[in-house]
Length: 264
Image 1 (cartoon, rainbow, N blue to C red):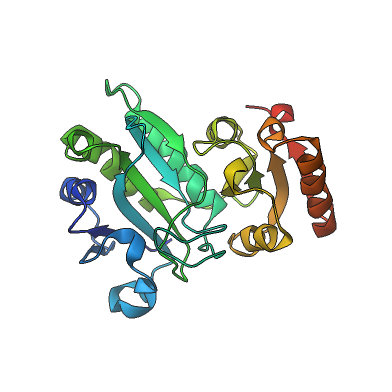
Image 2 (tube, rainbow, N blue to C red):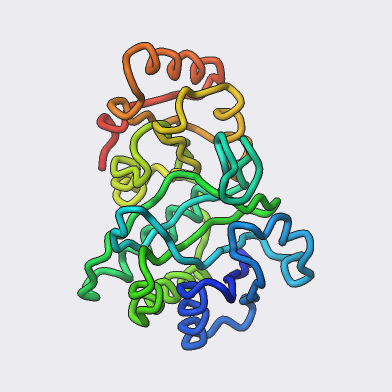
């Protein structure tokens, strides 16, 4: 898979990761500095000649949170409802469940034993930009001290370098996730440990109630065929809301299962 790495000159974590990437041999990987913050680079894949022939884009960025928890995170971009931080209302980017699974497993592997306090986690699909090519964000959180940490930059850079060896395993089933909190702990365990399931977009509880538009957007913006919809049952609101979720899923004809019934 041909891929590119994008980072913003305004982003301390992105600059840190880009600097660390110089230590790795990536002769065929465009590493492109952007003027604007990553989340506001709408349609950059259509406007940048170097991206014309790539299959996947990795945005290397900082992560910010109110809690300020140390984290190394990975997620697909897009907006289920409002578009307060780039992108468009109700539109998400194309992504690959298999690429996300591979990168998440490698991120965990590369962070292991590095004596860091950071939690390695997936995040739900959120924020911009909206682009056409399949993509994801890989991030260092959540403050200036972390963004500038060379060890963290090297962990992310090693994970990106490892992506050169990515070979899609089409025997793995692709799933959409629904429910649960922003850092999706139940989906994390499945993505990391279950060899048979790869997760693409995740629609969190705070974006419910689910609509048919949201569900179809998640399915259509997953590069692989969606085989399964995973439900964080306790993270889908009250009984009435859960039944609405089930009803919408059944209309798609795609099988569904609760996360607690999936091997982790």
